[in-house]
Amino acid sequence: MTEAVLDVVDVVKRLGHGAGEVQALKGVSLSLNGGELVLLMGPSGSGKTTLLSVMGCLMTPARGTVRVRGRSIAGAGPEDLAKLRRDNIGFIFQSYHLFPTLTAEDNVRLALDVRGQRSRRTAITARESLALVGLSHKTKAFPIELSGGEQQRVAIARAIVGNASAILADEPTGALDAQNGQAIMAMLAEIARDQSRGVLVVTHDPRILPFANRIVHIEDGRVVREESGEHSREPRMLRS
Amino acid sequence: MSLKFRLASRNLFHDRLRFIATIVGIVFSIVLVTVQTGLYVGFGRMVTTMIDHAPADLWVLPLGTKSFEDPSLLDDRQRFRVLAVNGVAEAASLVIGFAQWRLPGGGTTPVFIVGSELRGLGLHPWDLVAGRIDDLSIPGAVAVDESYFARLGASGIGANAEIRDQKVEVAAVTKGIRSFTTTPYAFTGLDRARTYTGISAEKASYLLVRVSPDADVDSVRRRLQENLSDVEVLTTAEFRSRSRAFWLFGTGAGAALFAGALLGIIVGTVIVAQTLYSSTKDHMDEFATLRAIGSSGRYIYMVIIWQALLSAVIGFCGAAVISAIVVKATAESALPIVVTPALTLGLFLLTVAMCVASAIAAIVQVMRIDPALVFTR
Image (cartoon, rainbow over all chains, first blue to last red; front, side, top):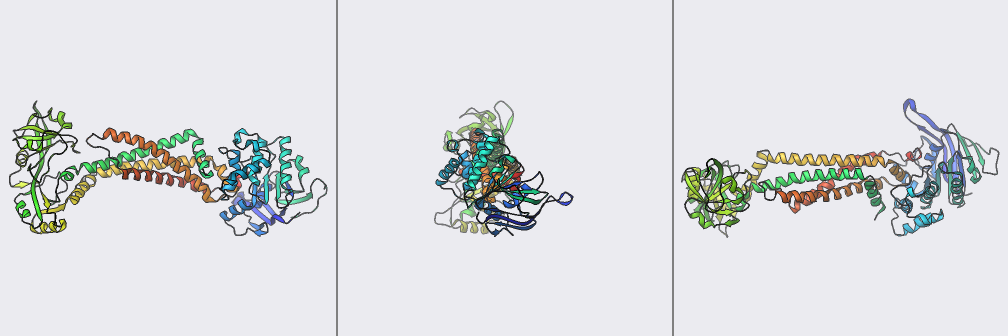
C-alpha cells in the first residue's frame, strides 16, 4: 500500500433543512490508499453515498477534514472543487451516466475535454482507454447500442482516461447480471493494482467481496467495522 | 468539431419536434421584426422621396413646416432676395398641394400636385417611361405614375381629366413614383400647379436653392436666414430628417412599427428561452455528470450558448428566405419593405443577441445544479 489518495477525518455532513435536517455522516474517518480496492458497505440510508460524495468533492462537509492527495479542500469553492475532481477523481455510476448522443469514444474523450485536453491525440487516448476495458471494437457505438455491461465499461474507461488517482464507484454492478458484474469488478481490481490509484466501491452486492483489499461497513452515519478483504473474517479496527 | 459544439448540436437536434418548434419560433419572430423594421426603412424612404429627388442644396420653407407635404405658403417674392444673397447660384419656386382630379366618367379622386419651372432648377418627374419633361410645357399637361392609371381613369399618354374645371392631359408617364399617402402625384409646370391648387401667383410652397460650387453651403444658409423673414432655411439633409421625424414619430407610425418589432423580439426571446430552458432541464443529468467529472461552469455554459447560437443561425437563415420573398412581393407596392445590407447584418446580430439572452434562464438553472445529483438518479 502507498499513501492515501483520498482521506477524510471526523467528517460530519448534514442533509436537508429545518425540521427535515438529518445528520448523514456523524464523524466519519476513512482513507483510500493507492493500490487498494475498498468496498464501502452498509444498509440503505447508512450514509454510503453521502460519504462517497464528500470523498469525491461533490459535497463539502459541515465539519471535519477532506484531503485529496494530502491537500485539504477546506475553503475550496465550487470551481476549485471541480478542478480537484477533474485532476484527481474518476467516477463510475450505477446508471452509467453516459451521454446518449455521443459515441463511446466521445464519451471517454469528454473526460479529457473538460480538462482542456483537445488535441487529436485525445481520440487515440480515448480509444486506448476503451481497449483497456475490452471495447476497442465499439468505439463508434452509441450507448443505446451497447449492453449494460458494455456501458459500464465505457464509464470505467471515462473514469480512468485522465489518470485519476482515485476511482469512486457507486454500485457499479447494481444494474448488471452476475457475469458482467464479476467482469466489471475484475477490471476495477486490476485498476487498483496500480500503486498510484485507489478504488472505492459502494456496494450492496456480497458477490464482489473477493475483489476487496479492505471492506468498510457503515451504519447510521458511522463507520462501524473495517476488515481486510477476502482473507480476513474478523473486525480489524473502528475508525469512528 | 469541438466536443462542446458536438454535445450542443446533438442536444439541440435530439428532440426534433422541440427543435422544429424553436426554429419556427425564431423564424416567426425574425420575420416579424424584419417586416416591421423593413417597413420602417421603406416608410422612411417613401416620405422623403420628393426631397431626395429635388436637386437643391438648400430649402427655404415657411416657418413651422413639419414635412414636405405640409401645405404652408411663403411669399414668392422672397426668391429675389434669395438670389441676391452671395453664394446662391440658382433659386426656384416649388408649389405643392392637394387637388381633386375629376374622372372622365364622373366622380373625383384626390391628387397631390407638384409644380415647378420645367427648365432649370425644379422638382421634375423622374423614371419616365413615356413622354418627356418638355411635354409638360403644353397647357394642361401633367405627368402621372402608371401604377395610378386605374385610380385616375387614365390609360396612358393623351388621357384627359379635369382639375378645378381646367383641362388636364397626361403628357408623361413615370414608373415607381408611389406615394405613401396613396394619393397619386401629378407633376406639372409652376403656373399650372398654382391654378390646380388655388395658390396665388405671389405664393409658393418652397424655394429650392442651389449654391455656387465655390460657396460654402452652411455660410450661404446662414446668410439666407439673416436676410429672410418668416421662413426657415434648411439643408436637404435637415429637411429630409425633419420630414422623416414628423411622419415616423410625430404621427405615431414609427412607434407602431417599433412596437411591432419589439413584440417580435419579445416573442422570439420567450420562445427560445423556453426551449433552451426545457432542453437544459431534460439534460440536467448530463450537465450534472459533466459537473461531477470536473467540468468548469464555463464549459457547461458554453454548451448552452452553442445551442443558442446554432438556433440563431438556423433560425435566421429560415427567416432570411421568407423575408426575401416578402421583400420581393412588396417591392412594387405603395409601401415597400426595404431590407438593406446593414439592416440584414443588424437583424442577424439581433437574432444572435436574442438567442444568447434566451440562454440566461437555462444558465441560471445549470448554475444551481448539484453535481451530487448523479448518485441519486
